[in-house]
Image (cartoon, rainbow over all chains, first blue to last red):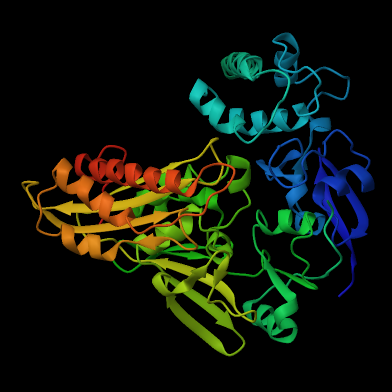
Length: 167
Length: 296
């Protein structure tokens, strides 16, 4: 068995292929092999949540899974949120407006968790938001503004949805 | 903080898996959800020479009904299924209640039920549930299959009776006794952390609620393995479920515990906590607050 292997993933809608060490974690694969440095490396043992990405629509820790385990998977990272023209995703816009970040290190992971949360629960309660956020450490904001950001994003995305379905 | 070098195998069948384990034995480690193993690799607390990734092995990712009211859960079924899979929610809702305490959503996306059992952290929820619900573990190797009762499966801190050549392929939870109401409680410093202490309790009472017909009681996070208080369970039968009876039962169930101390709490604190949680859990079963009656 080889110690290197070809990994094929679909990241943010694009097919990407790279040969990598079998011991490479998914987050290092994204950053080092694919050049997608938006996903951050924090604690590297699954505690801080900075490396969170969506795999098949589910929030996962990219630091505690191997790149080879993601072979064939559909991934979404923070780079995939904004439109190609630079228009921010409603979640990003809400975080900007509500000051849901200060240093921003943990933010890519929190945004990805928020994506799954709002996809599965369009109008989450504060308790639900806190439960999902418990998988993330932020040492700047005290979380209150993060919660408010998610609430604003939820409201806006729900009304966008209503406009869409009315059309 | 990067994994050490290893040889990586990603078998597609169980026969291939057990053949690799038979060949590499002690040096091999099975990788399922990886939510405990990958941190250990990153910190180099584990240095297996061979990693056997079972995520692509066919037919291990299923939940199926098992006997009357029970469920059998394959090796790669994620912990998320505990609060999402209809068969599990319908038959053993206590597993869904308890699953909210397992790490975080992001961990439960990957972490597997069988992986948590095989890892055998004494502060983890699933080993305690397996003991309380009298689950059976199916261990497979090149020489066949062993079915092990949960009571005999956990040996000590992070240690089970699984041989290096075996893989846990399925856990079977039998249907719980009819009418038993369950409660699951644990305490940790932060939501999602490992428990300082926790308890799984079950009670069934006579129709008028005046006497206890059967009881289950397992405390965890307080010893090397989950601790089932079998003598206390037996002593509760026939007694009225009054506060004083339940309080005495909790005191007796935790009297002999000698939990380890760590930065989060002393041994004495953990024992007192286990006792308090046990009283509350038994009362919750009696009142069926926060519990659900499993389908039979």
